[in-house]
Length: 75
Image (cartoon, rainbow, N blue to C red; front, side, top):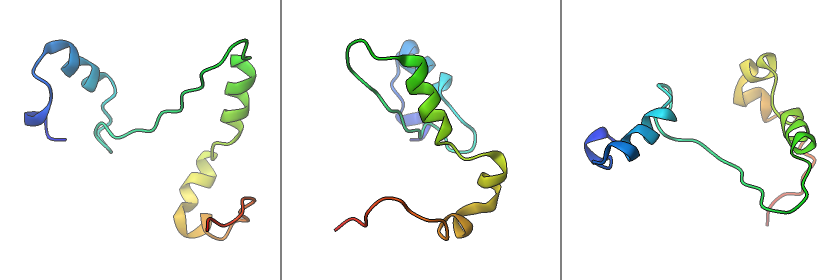
């Protein structure tokens, strides 16, 4: 969203700038887990294990599309 459409209050604008990325602006994805007695360190480790390495990331979408997909196709 262009800055002229940002909220005008300083607190909201500061939150936008805090998350700003020059490549994608304010676009991002967030995952929120809500529960009791969750092992945060274990959850973070498991999620981190899902991330691509720098080498894998550099291979790009054309290569990624050739990789085995362990999930069933969506109907």
